[in-house]
Image 1 (tube, helix red, strand yellow):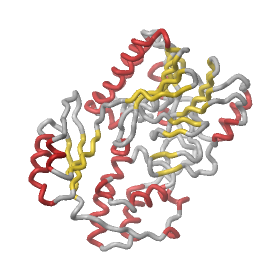
Image 2 (cartoon, helix red, strand yellow; image 1 turned 180 degrees about the vertical axis):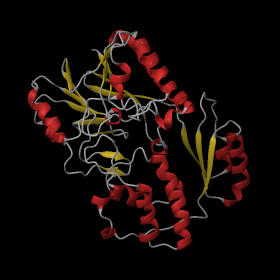
Image 3 (cartoon, helix red, strand yellow; image 1 turned 90 degrees about the horizontal axis):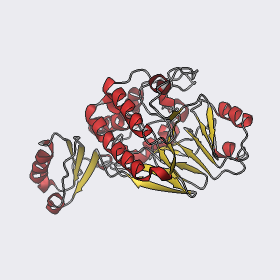
Length: 390
């Protein structure tokens, strides 16, 4: 039985094309290429689920060079590489005529890429590019022969699934899995990019991103997915760039095994015992000596129980757009909205608000890429936690 290789959103120009971050990403692709090389006779397709790039206007030259090399290396195996367009590669808000994937990769004879305008049918699978509205998807479903399709791939913003660990898509106008299922009588699975959190039910699989893009992925199992004989298997990526270390005793420091990598990492050292501050500082110094970025977080100076009035939150006015290609035309300064919420709506002291604001804004910047709709659910879950151990 032939295998399909499925890779979620890769966002090659994450962190504005930061070279250190690209070095981290390259290690994943080296492992991917090695796996394909060893199994090439058994692989039918290599599928990228969208968002090859993040910025739909500017691509860093070093990222562009690596993107071309990556797909040149993958093309050597002569296995079809299917490129689904995600929302982040589309330039215009209400048009799909210009996208960064086609601009970068089109008409390159040395690349074995399968690119398409709306959809592509191959064997028992169909692949859909990103569309802004449910109605556009339904129009495509109605025009194709769906009776033999078992797998539907796309970059779907499906209702009821998680944008992040803390926010769920509750937009009633979103495409639902039932909207897809009714057109595909032999459907076995819907496989989609777009959401970075791995999640699955009987009908839908979001494999998630292949590597960490922010602190939000520190506790997730990431990698690429293998589809073989109707079974999906995760090939885990063990490289991490974000790492939280919870330190309860000095033994936790002594037992920590540092592994040198080609890239520098981001650490959070989280501890409860005030008496350990000198040991924590020494540990931090050792990590920073290797050019890592290290933050220390103590849990004894800041613990609050925040009470909020649910009735004050108007979710309709706190929706975020993940994609600049959305056709709603909405935009807002979310930092201003959050700042207003913290200082005017939280029932805590002014001094606590100051501390809360500094820490919350730092966390917000770290996960800003993953923020989308439904701030209410996201905010309430975070506020109920001890913020410094997130």
